[in-house]
Image (cartoon, rainbow, N blue to C red; front, side, top):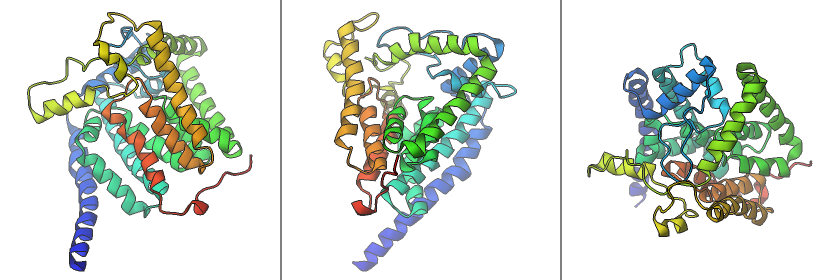
Length: 357
């Protein structure tokens, strides 16, 4: 029996080393040298080119209502501004940048989860990376050159490091996706002395970068466009799987459908009526989604108020993810920190405690 255990342990160690190593040695170089374009980098590159040309990065605007978005830039202005600093923000150049950011994000996520769970850091991080590169929905997000893997890393490492560094990482994550803003609030409230100055400095640096690139008036205009047109669209969820998802019966077609489906549990009740809304959702449905998206993480934060700060932040991140009107399977890694924090090896009295305010 002992021999079987040793063989199983050796096989596990080999897998967590071989999978990431093969991914870095074979997959990443192939992605960095390919001329085959993915859809997301084209959208990001178009927004960056609009920044350089003085046009709106949100042109064309997404259609209102809970319908498919199509090729629209949906992030706040910062990401498009940073990409516009490339000498030539072509789709291929942007795609290569996203591949590097994605790989860095996956390894950062692995390190963050290992810290949260108090696993041996190298072995724990490699185990997370191996799972990510072997799980089709998550590797699809990497292969699509989407920004999500980079945000996975910012969120996981930010939650795992309840400090100035963690606050800065969560600010950067919140500059692209809203869910990292919730654990950031936990850090700001629980340990303000360590996190508020760092968060303010990070916000100021990001704001200065956008102002220097766009100018004050254009920055205000672009931010207003995002708040007025993009946020309400994202906040209304999505009824149907986009028609561009493959349905040819193949495994790739299956994963394509799964990747683009909306699994939000809070949006599920609205599916009982099909998609009867040609435009926007009724005001009552929008109010319901907004209340749930705020109330669920807020209540979770209160229920976990006596937990160590990083554990509370991880739970709130998971709650905000599950309460979002749109929940893709590629948002699954935002649940990992809660699982890691819940399974942490150290006894409670060895957990990171709050610092005095």
